[in-house]
Length: 188
Ligand SMILES: C[S@@+](CC[C@H](N)C(=O)[O-])C[C@H]1O[C@@H](n2cnc3c(N)ncnc32)[C@H](O)[C@@H]1O
Image (cartoon, rainbow, N blue to C red; front, side, top):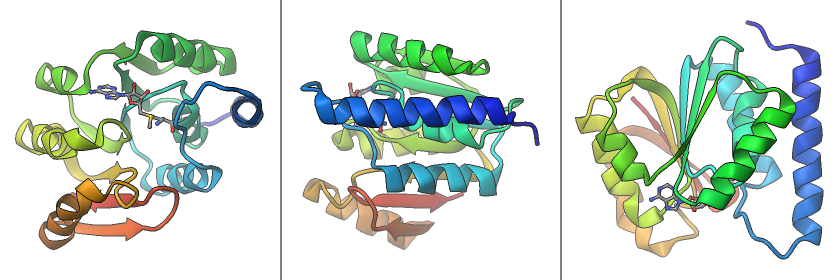
C-alpha cells in the first residue's frame, strides 16, 4: 500500500483549513462531520478499495477524507451538479496534490445512466430523494463489484428516508451508524 506521509499531511491540513473556514463563512457546503470523516477514512483503510465513487462532492471536504487512506494506485471519482462547488473541489484536490481523481460536473442520475465502470466503494451524499434511484442504478446497472460497500449519508436526519432505511436493513447485509445525520452502510 502506497500513501506518502507528506501527501497525508497536506490532506489533513486542508481538512483543518476547510473546517476553520466553515466556522467563519456564510457559505454552506453541507460537509460531513469530523467524526464521519474519521469513519469514512477508516473504512477505506479497512476495505482497501480500488475504485471509489462519491455522489455529492460539494467543496471536496468528504473527498479529502476518502482519499486520506486511499492507495495512490486506486481511483477516486466524484460527481457534483453545482458548477461553483465542482470548481472549488477541483482546486482543493489539486492543491493537496491528488492525482488519480476524476471530478465530474453532472447530475448523478445522468452520470450513473451513462457509465459501465464498476466501483467497490461508493459514498452517496446528495439528493436524499434520489437514494432509491441511485441504488437501483448501481445494482441494476451492475456498477458494483463483489464485496463492495455503499454508504448513504443523512438517512436519519431526513425522515422521508425511513422506509428506504427499513427496506435496506431487511434486504441487504447492512448497518446503521449513528454518527452525523446517520450513515447507512450496505455490504454487497
Ligand atoms: C450534502 S452536500 C455534499 C457534502 C460533501 N459530501 C461533503 O461532506 O463535503 C450535497 C451536494 O450534492 C449536490 N447534489 C445535489 N443533487 C445532486 C445531483 N442530483 N447530482 C449531483 N450532485 C448533486 C449538491 O449540489 C451538494 O453540493
